[in-house]
Every structure is written in structure tokens, then in C-alpha cells.
Image (cartoon, rainbow, N blue to C red; front, side, top):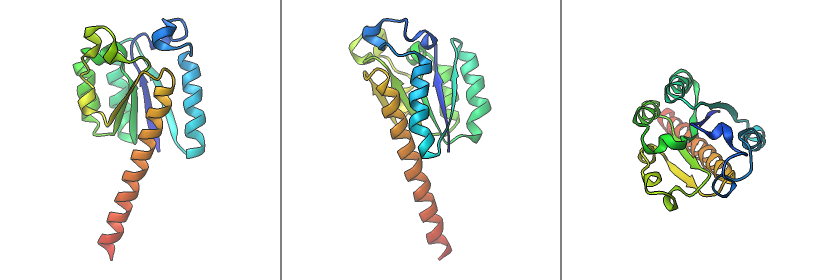
Length: 158
């Protein structure tokens, strides 16, 4: 199983940003925690971060056909990134959206989430643990979907 872990604008600055909202972990530290979770589950993670929406879209279009799911923190693109949303939706992959802070309790513009409706779940407000919880949910969903497909094919061959 291969999962894309995508981070949008300013997430490369984690560890130096407002600790109250974003915690003290760097993006590399979060990625290391995700790897520790994924490795024993035989899950390959492919990490990508960009401050540019077009680069995120190019990455998604290039990598999604050989992937099982997407874990994404779109950063500020959450609120207005319609082309990112379309690229994600076009993959037909399961998507879990994560945010370090609780965007529902912040400024009004942060309450707008254009990615939410195409995501299986949105995990917010848990700082770096939002990623851990989101990845766990995504792995379980993919495993259960795969198991259902196998069972369905077995029934057809009987």
C-alpha cells in the first residue's frame, strides 16, 4: 500500500510557527512519526510539501495512479484551493484531511473548507497527532476496502 502525504503552504515552517496553534514539531519530525506508524504495517509513504498550488497538483497527478490513498494538510489552500480540490477529487482515492489547529475555532475565513466534502474525514486540533490519527483512519479504511473487494471477488468465483 502506498499513501501520499501532502503538505501545503507554510507547513515547511513548522517548529518556528505559532506553537499555540501548530505545536512545536517540525514537518520532518511529524514525517518521522508517520514513518514509524507506517513501516510495521507495510505501508509506503511518499512525502511532498510545496508552497505552490500548481506543484501540489502536478505531484498529485503524477503520483496518484500508483497510490492507495492521500493524507493531506492543504494549509491555507483549505479555504480557497479549488484547483487543488479538483485534482484531489479526480484521483478517486480515499482522502483524509488533517489540520494541526482547530480551524473551526479560529478566524472566520479559516472556517471555510473546500476540501472537506471530498474527504472521508477531517482531523483537526490535535497538533502533530492529527496526522497520526488521520493516517490510522486512512490505513484502516484502505485495508477494509481491500478486504471487501477480495471477499466480493471470492463470492463471484463460487
